[in-house]
Image: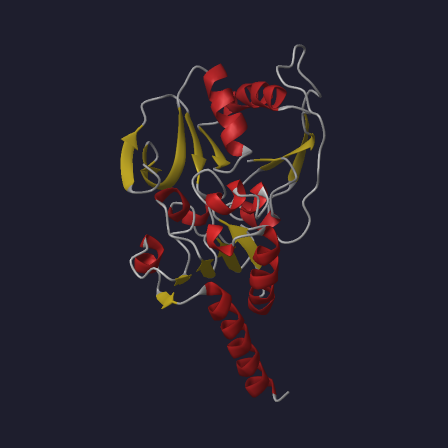
Length: 276
């Protein structure tokens, strides 16, 4: 297992060896070339099916002359895997006859393994490619709890109608649930929320304990990113919306009335149970 320093340590439970990249390459082309070389001593090369893993792993697999598999959600055997296709509507079973398996996996589909963390072996990668095909214009750190780590997500859709409404309506509910905000692609495209909040096939794949979908119809690409959530709550005026059929709790109501009412109900519950 190679750690670039950005993955939570709990993700390494169960590993027998941990190799840490002390000096990560500055660009994805160099990273892919370096990992293609490092992979020669391993049977399988796996990466999270996020924007980072989907960027470098197919490049590295191509350099190694093999096919990469994406969005793997299970293994029947060492060379037989299940992967989500068509925005998660179908599950494909594939057998790989390649000498080495390269795949991105949906981390939310696998349970964490218990065990002590292995010792860290430091690695040093080349800093840059001789002829890079891309140029890094800047870097911006993202603070706060990530979507994948949050126990609760409050996701909004285009029905919020503005960026101001998105924060004013949804943030109080997210705070009461101890979670963070998320968004559908339609909300992101409309400029109501940043791209880093997008959940779905073209965004982040999440599986929180609680997922509240506010004003989200439930397009296939969005459902593919959150269908494994433990409890799904949908608020929508359309009772026939796909998200309402998927939800464990479906509330047919205007979101501008329902969300404040839900916040008030949570406040009342907390007051009764804390004696405040």
